[in-house]
Picture 1 (tube, rainbow, N blue to C red):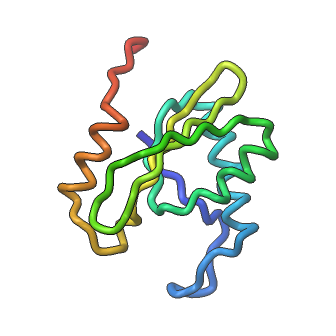
Picture 2 (picture 1 turned 90 degrees about the vertical axis):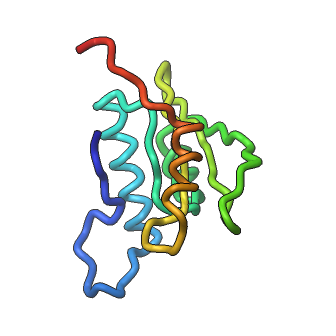
Amino acid sequence: MAYHNLALDPLKSLKARPSYSQYLEGWNELLELTHLMAVDQAIVYGLESKKIAEAAKRRGSILQPSPMQTKVGRSRPKLITIRDGDRAMKLLFIRHPSAFFSWRKWALVILEHLPIQENQSV
């Protein structure tokens, strides 16, 4: 288990938002780290997936979105598989935890689409 903050640079204030290029740099770093760590699935806080598409394209990776019928409140999760050579990683985009939503409902989405896997190599 690991946590990665997409904004790699300190922001000027608590209310400041990262720029598009800062997010893109964060996605590039995430793709590099997950490749090195052989990550096969990740939960992404936030439903916006445009920046990962650009980062994957720059890297030469293939994005495969999976249509999802599931809806939690007014939000619909997104499931995207990134293929990079012989590696594949599933990304499940859920509503950001700073937004009001039911953890119990989102937990069901996570369990359905990113089941807990035991590492057989340990």
